[in-house]
Image 1: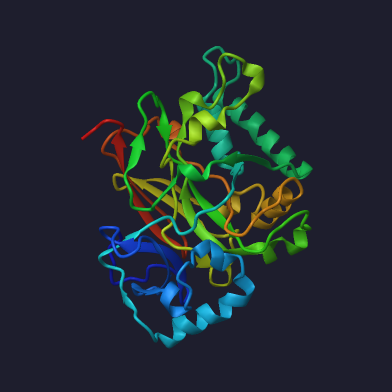
Image 2 (image 1 turned 90 degrees about the vertical axis):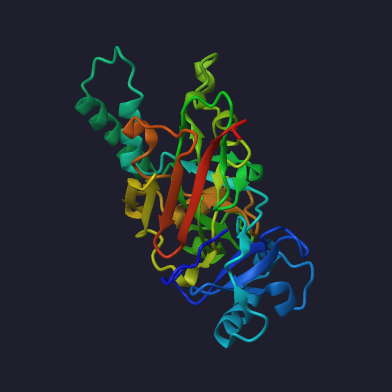
Length: 334
């Protein structure tokens, strides 16, 4: 659910959302046009398409965007308040691409936190070494991208279940890119033509299972550490790219129980939105509604020495995109 306050929910004249009645009655989730003052319009009725979804809108984004803009300005039709409606993840992607090690300071902090006890380097030396590695990656133009599961997504206000056996659950708030046009082998200078808009993702990670201890040469185990059901709260809104401004200059902020833990600009990204979209498209075909998670900035739990536990409340925001609020619940807890 979302609480509508006196302040704008997001920047721009409108956003897209997937909503339903609070009790999931009346036909289940539906695609909605949402205004920053907290009004919602069921797009199935407004466009005369009973089977419409946000993803099907994205499949013809260039054609439908002017109509959505007109609806937002006209304010005609059966608009209703968001209060009392349930807010789901704004889109159901077919694919989720996740950028790792994309914030310079975040990687430096993680490397320092994971240093073995017998590391002969001082912390300052270790930080300087990994900083040099990050600078070389950027110079050599080598993003790091892996695949996530759509089944890990959940709504922006749902409880997050911490699985039994998840020893080090951690937060990672991120800017998420939503794809419109199909993209395959797209040049850098045309990559942004394939971006419909942006939303917020909290890409939770079990730090204890990131690395395979049985066969270190295998490296990371993203299935085990990131893809539990509901481990990626998404949304609340899909804000069109044209109203967001520069995605390379947005503030990503996460609060844990009211205390600010992450508060960093996307300026710290090694590889920006256009570079990630182009890079992924050289290796896979991006489809309308797909997500590109751009990585998480400094300030995760490993850095603070404080990981998630039952009862914790996370509040995440990105400039112009609104905010999400999720409560952690241990698996099996009442």
